[in-house]
Image (cartoon, rainbow, N blue to C red; front, side, top):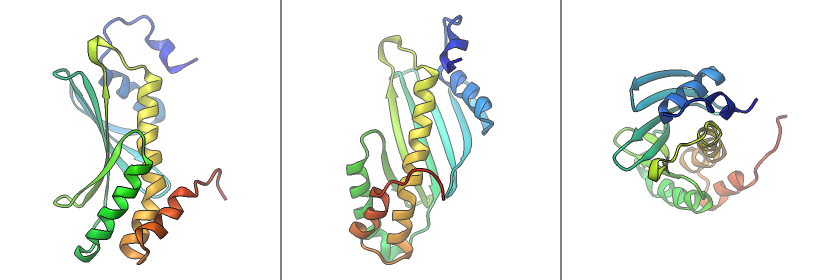
Length: 167
């Protein structure tokens, strides 16, 4: 049974209700912060990622941010930002940014649902999967630039060499 089939009978779907059902389905730890926001923890290979989804009825956008802590030394910030430019050039959906004050790496994406559109559970699941996949793919490159004294170009070779399966 597809994720959407359980929603076919419901007319008034709230995107955060769908996210909550997905979090339960995947057994992710989550906290429903309010009617329009949910926060969850998703375990990856490298980190546990904090993911927050918020619905804005004003502009009909489902916003996702996926964060993880990163504390680069001040002298590495230039290389980090250069690496983020390379990373974002490779990302077609979503983008990374570094919130220096909070010491957080952030991947963010906004899904526009204008005109009363409804996101399917599969779309939202894919959105969350894309966030974790991007974080997992680029985390090693960011670490190599910050702590491994690699150039951004050298570090990006690690991210470009996408592995399949597990050893």
